[in-house]
Length: 184
Ligand SMILES: [Zn+2]
Image (cartoon, rainbow, N blue to C red; front, side):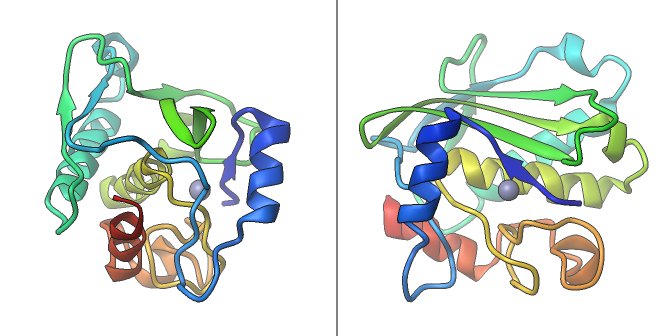
Protein backbone atom coordinates (compact mmCIF):
# COMPACT_ATOMS: atom_id res chain seq x y z
CA UNK A 1 0.00 0.00 0.00
CA UNK A 2 1.45 3.33 -0.94
CA UNK A 3 1.82 5.64 1.99
CA UNK A 4 1.73 9.31 1.54
CA UNK A 5 2.82 12.27 3.54
CA UNK A 6 0.54 15.20 2.94
CA UNK A 7 1.11 18.18 5.10
CA UNK A 8 1.32 21.76 3.98
CA UNK A 9 1.47 20.30 0.54
CA UNK A 10 3.50 22.65 -1.61
CA UNK A 11 6.04 23.32 1.09
CA UNK A 12 6.64 19.76 2.12
CA UNK A 13 6.84 18.52 -1.45
CA UNK A 14 9.52 21.09 -2.12
CA UNK A 15 11.35 19.90 0.96
CA UNK A 16 11.10 16.30 -0.05
CA UNK A 17 12.61 17.10 -3.41
CA UNK A 18 15.35 19.34 -2.04
CA UNK A 19 16.28 17.21 0.93
CA UNK A 20 16.37 13.58 -0.20
CA UNK A 21 18.99 12.84 2.43
CA UNK A 22 22.47 11.91 1.43
CA UNK A 23 24.75 9.02 2.24
CA UNK A 24 22.72 7.51 5.03
CA UNK A 25 19.93 5.15 4.24
CA UNK A 26 17.38 7.07 6.25
CA UNK A 27 15.82 10.23 4.91
CA UNK A 28 14.73 13.29 6.84
CA UNK A 29 11.77 15.52 6.16
CA UNK A 30 13.81 18.61 7.03
CA UNK A 31 11.97 20.26 9.89
CA UNK A 32 12.36 18.74 13.36
CA UNK A 33 11.24 19.33 16.92
CA UNK A 34 13.20 21.53 19.26
CA UNK A 35 13.09 18.57 21.62
CA UNK A 36 11.55 15.10 21.66
CA UNK A 37 11.96 14.65 25.41
CA UNK A 38 9.19 14.89 26.19
CA UNK A 39 6.90 14.83 23.19
CA UNK A 40 3.31 15.34 24.36
CA UNK A 41 0.75 13.27 22.52
CA UNK A 42 -2.84 12.32 22.92
CA UNK A 43 -5.72 10.49 21.35
CA UNK A 44 -9.43 10.80 21.77
CA UNK A 45 -10.75 7.49 23.08
CA UNK A 46 -13.98 8.13 21.24
CA UNK A 47 -12.14 7.62 17.94
CA UNK A 48 -11.35 4.04 18.90
CA UNK A 49 -14.58 2.83 20.47
CA UNK A 50 -15.07 0.29 17.70
CA UNK A 51 -11.41 -0.39 17.06
CA UNK A 52 -9.52 -1.19 20.26
CA UNK A 53 -6.92 -3.07 18.20
CA UNK A 54 -5.97 0.19 16.51
CA UNK A 55 -5.64 1.99 19.80
CA UNK A 56 -3.46 -0.84 21.06
CA UNK A 57 -1.28 -0.46 17.97
CA UNK A 58 -0.70 3.24 18.71
CA UNK A 59 0.12 2.41 22.29
CA UNK A 60 2.53 -0.37 21.33
CA UNK A 61 4.26 1.83 18.75
CA UNK A 62 4.69 4.62 21.28
CA UNK A 63 6.36 2.14 23.61
CA UNK A 64 8.46 0.81 20.72
CA UNK A 65 9.86 4.27 20.00
CA UNK A 66 10.26 5.17 23.67
CA UNK A 67 12.28 1.99 24.06
CA UNK A 68 14.80 2.86 21.35
CA UNK A 69 18.29 4.14 22.23
CA UNK A 70 17.27 7.68 21.24
CA UNK A 71 16.08 10.73 23.21
CA UNK A 72 12.50 10.03 22.10
CA UNK A 73 10.10 10.19 25.02
CA UNK A 74 6.42 10.33 24.08
CA UNK A 75 4.18 11.19 27.00
CA UNK A 76 0.41 10.91 26.91
CA UNK A 77 -1.19 14.10 28.10
CA UNK A 78 -4.82 15.07 28.03
CA UNK A 79 -5.19 17.35 25.04
CA UNK A 80 -1.45 17.00 24.44
CA UNK A 81 -0.71 19.70 21.98
CA UNK A 82 2.16 18.25 19.97
CA UNK A 83 1.20 14.91 18.43
CA UNK A 84 -2.37 13.80 17.82
CA UNK A 85 -2.94 10.10 17.05
CA UNK A 86 -6.14 9.06 15.40
CA UNK A 87 -8.07 6.91 12.99
CA UNK A 88 -9.29 7.73 9.50
CA UNK A 89 -11.94 5.95 7.44
CA UNK A 90 -11.21 6.60 3.78
CA UNK A 91 -12.00 3.59 1.58
CA UNK A 92 -10.51 4.92 -1.65
CA UNK A 93 -7.58 6.85 -0.28
CA UNK A 94 -4.79 4.52 -1.40
CA UNK A 95 -2.92 5.04 1.88
CA UNK A 96 -3.11 3.09 5.11
CA UNK A 97 -1.39 5.72 7.21
CA UNK A 98 -1.01 9.46 6.97
CA UNK A 99 0.91 12.09 8.88
CA UNK A 100 0.52 15.81 8.57
CA UNK A 101 3.48 17.83 9.73
CA UNK A 102 2.95 21.44 10.71
CA UNK A 103 6.12 23.44 10.99
CA UNK A 104 7.39 26.96 11.30
CA UNK A 105 10.77 27.57 9.77
CA UNK A 106 12.83 24.49 10.57
CA UNK A 107 10.79 23.58 13.61
CA UNK A 108 7.94 21.09 13.78
CA UNK A 109 5.19 22.52 15.95
CA UNK A 110 2.38 20.01 15.59
CA UNK A 111 1.74 16.66 13.93
CA UNK A 112 -1.40 14.66 13.31
CA UNK A 113 -1.13 10.96 12.47
CA UNK A 114 -3.82 8.51 11.47
CA UNK A 115 -4.11 4.98 10.26
CA UNK A 116 -6.77 4.28 7.68
CA UNK A 117 -9.18 1.78 9.15
CA UNK A 118 -10.65 1.06 5.72
CA UNK A 119 -7.46 -0.88 5.04
CA UNK A 120 -6.13 -1.75 8.49
CA UNK A 121 -9.37 -3.51 9.43
CA UNK A 122 -8.03 -6.39 7.29
CA UNK A 123 -4.56 -6.32 8.89
CA UNK A 124 -3.17 -8.43 11.71
CA UNK A 125 -2.32 -6.52 14.93
CA UNK A 126 1.40 -6.46 14.10
CA UNK A 127 0.73 -5.19 10.59
CA UNK A 128 -1.30 -2.32 12.04
CA UNK A 129 1.56 -1.70 14.45
CA UNK A 130 3.86 -1.51 11.44
CA UNK A 131 1.69 1.32 10.12
CA UNK A 132 1.41 3.20 13.43
CA UNK A 133 5.14 2.86 14.11
CA UNK A 134 5.91 4.17 10.63
CA UNK A 135 3.65 7.19 11.12
CA UNK A 136 5.28 7.94 14.47
CA UNK A 137 8.58 7.94 12.58
CA UNK A 138 7.19 10.75 10.43
CA UNK A 139 6.05 12.57 13.54
CA UNK A 140 9.70 12.68 14.61
CA UNK A 141 10.83 14.09 11.26
CA UNK A 142 11.84 10.93 9.41
CA UNK A 143 11.09 10.74 5.70
CA UNK A 144 10.17 7.84 3.45
CA UNK A 145 12.45 5.02 2.38
CA UNK A 146 11.97 3.03 -0.77
CA UNK A 147 10.80 -0.46 -1.51
CA UNK A 148 13.44 -2.94 -0.36
CA UNK A 149 14.55 -0.85 2.63
CA UNK A 150 15.00 -2.87 5.80
CA UNK A 151 13.49 -0.19 8.00
CA UNK A 152 10.26 0.89 9.59
CA UNK A 153 10.36 3.92 7.32
CA UNK A 154 10.07 1.73 4.22
CA UNK A 155 7.18 3.46 2.55
CA UNK A 156 5.24 0.31 1.72
CA UNK A 157 3.28 -1.97 4.02
CA UNK A 158 2.19 -4.71 1.62
CA UNK A 159 3.79 -6.73 -1.14
CA UNK A 160 7.33 -7.91 -1.94
CA UNK A 161 10.06 -5.62 -0.62
CA UNK A 162 7.64 -3.83 1.68
CA UNK A 163 8.23 -3.17 5.33
CA UNK A 164 5.71 -5.63 6.73
CA UNK A 165 4.82 -8.24 4.13
CA UNK A 166 8.38 -8.19 2.81
CA UNK A 167 10.41 -8.11 6.03
CA UNK A 168 7.99 -8.49 8.92
CA UNK A 169 9.08 -5.14 10.37
CA UNK A 170 6.79 -3.46 12.90
CA UNK A 171 9.27 -1.81 15.26
CA UNK A 172 12.11 0.68 14.64
CA UNK A 173 15.23 -0.81 13.00
CA UNK A 174 18.80 0.46 13.12
CA UNK A 175 18.34 2.81 10.14
CA UNK A 176 15.32 4.42 11.78
CA UNK A 177 17.22 4.85 15.04
CA UNK A 178 20.20 6.34 13.21
CA UNK A 179 17.92 8.86 11.52
CA UNK A 180 16.40 9.99 14.80
CA UNK A 181 19.78 10.24 16.49
CA UNK A 182 21.06 12.31 13.60
CA UNK A 183 18.36 14.86 14.40
CA UNK A 184 18.22 14.85 18.21
ZN1 LIG B 1 5.31 7.18 5.17
